[in-house]
Image (tube, rainbow, N blue to C red; front, side, top):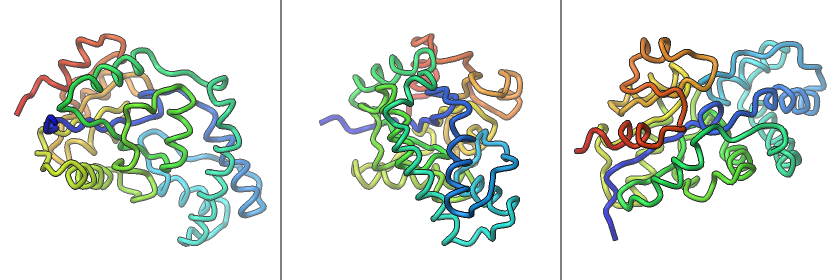
Length: 235
């Protein structure tokens, strides 16, 4: 069996899939169920974790963001997501090149693919499965938004899980974070990882480059460019 030499940590929203608008609808339903209040405003979602977003929403609607209240909101979000899972594919799309990149890296025995995402684990599964992007992603070893309000904390969590599962230590320069926001870039840089940014979300290529991304791509449709970005710095 090939010993892995690359760990690819994918973001989900606006990197692999476009489901804009879904989060607001789900939070509206979840907040009404948990707190009995109508959603009046949403914080910026881009690059942030569910723990940070949930605390902001509860606070801004007069609900103390205790661990109990945050987790109650998450359970409601997961239930809403699960109920919408069968129709998710009609409410969004897989972004160009996402499936091809995931499939291509799966043919490299030395690459492990998982997630560093602001999403909850269960919602991550729902979103990727809806667009048939789940097959080559190891959900068990991901870094998820339930862990911390500070996105850079998610990277070492995923690295630790992957290292333990595969019995190998992934050096920082063998870890590649792929995302669409400056927060994704910072999460990589703060942990010495390679930052690959895609300008498929709300941030321009220039903003992502200014954040310090090692490579900025317009999207994932140029498979050769994606390969070069991920594999171009061999150990």
